[in-house]
Amino acid sequence: MKGCFPIEQFNHIETPFYYYDTALLRSTLQAINKEAGRHENFVVHYAIKANANPKILNVISLAGLGADCVSGGEIRAALSTGFPASKVVYAGVGKSDWEINLGLDKDIFCFNVESKAELEVINELAGRKDKTAKICLRINPDVGAHTHANITTGLAEDKFGIAMSDMDQVIEAANKMGNIQFLGLHFHIGSQILEMDDFVALCNRINEIQNHLERHHIKVENINVGGGLGVDYIHPNRVPIPDFKTYFNTYARHLKLRDGQKLHFELGRAVVAQCGSLVTRSLYIKQGTHKQFVIVDAGMTDLIRPALYQAYHKIENISSEEPTETYDVVGPICESSDVFAKAIDLNKSHRGDLIAIRSAGAYGEIMASQYNCRKIPTGYITEDL
Ligand code: LLP
Image (cartoon, rainbow, N blue to C red; front, side, top):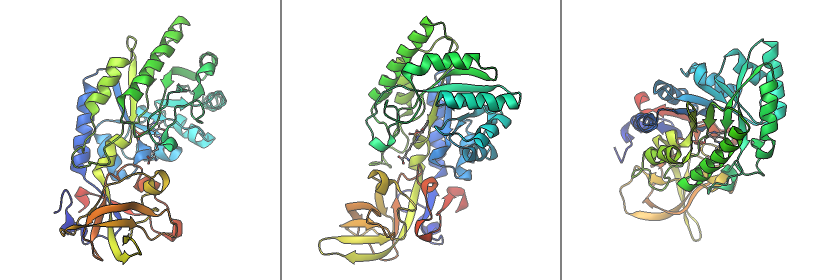
C-alpha cells in the first residue's frame, strides 16, 4: 500500500484503468447529506454527466440523492441504478423528441427547459400522451464564474438558457399551455468554481429576479441553482472532501427563499472527482535533448481534461520510493497534446511502474474515447479488488 492505493491488488489488473475509492465516495456523500440536511428546503441531485459508471451510480443513489440528467441515455443510466424517476431532473440545450418522450413515459420530476421552442415541443408531445410535463425554465443569469472559459455557462453570450429579457414572456406562455406545469427556475453558471463570491453573485441575481416576479404575481415553487462547486486538484490528500458546509451556507445566507420554496442543487465534480484515479503503467523512460519523459500506457483518450482544458491533475509514481526527478508525463496517442503534465517531480521512474493520475473521478472515464482504436478503460471500485 502506498498512500491510499491497494497496490498489491493493482498488479493483476490490466492498465490503464480507473480506480474508485468507495470509502471516500461514501464519506463525501455523508458530508453532503449532513451539510445540506441542516437546511430543510435543500434538495441535492447528482449530475450524472460527471461519472456514469453503474457501480458509482448505485452508491450515490443509495445515499438518497436525485439525478440530474442531460440526455435520454443518462435518464436510462439513472433509472437502472436505483434513482427514482420522481427525483430525476432533465436539462440540455438540444433535447430530441425521443428523449422528451422517454422523460414523459417515465414521469420524471422535471424538465429544465432551455428555450420557448423546446417548451412548445414538450407541450405538444405531452399532449399526445395526455400527460402534464413539469418544467423549470433555465434562465441565463449573465453571471460570470472565475473558471476555465470552456466551462463557464452563465454569460449572455453562452448558448445555455433563456435570456432574462425573454423570461416573463416565456413564463406567461408556459402558464397558458395545457400540458405544462410551471414549477420554477433553473440556473447553472459553470464548473470547478472555488470562489464563493461567484455563487453569491448568482444568489443576488436570483433575488432580483424573484422580486421582479413577485411584483408580477408570478409564483415560483422551485429554484435550481445547478452545480459547479470545485475540488482541490492540487491537494487531493489534504482536501479529499470539498467544503460542503461553506457551499450550502453561502446559499442559505444569500438566497432569499420564499415560504415553501425548495432549493435544488446539481453537483457533479464535487461528489466524485476525488475518489477516482486513473492508474497507468510506465512503458518507457525516454531521455530527450533537454527533458526526461515518462511514456505511460494511458492517453488523452482515457482522460482528456489536461489536453482539452489544460487541467492540472496531481500525478504520483506509486511503485517507487526513490528520490524524485523531473519528468514530462505523456501518453501514446499520435497527438502532441497528449500530455498529462510537464516538468513535474516524480519518484525516479522505471519501466513497469504504476503511475496514479489523481482527482480523475469526475469527467474522466465518462469522457473516454476510442480514438486510435483504443479500448475504453475499465472502472474498478474498492469492492472489486
Ligand atoms: N448542472 C448543469 C446544468 C451542468 O451543465 C453541469 C455541468 C452540472 C450541473 C454539474 O456541474 P459540476 O458540479 O460538475 O461542476 N467536462 C468539464 C466539465 C463540464 C461541466 C458541464 N456542466 C470538465 O472536465 O471540467
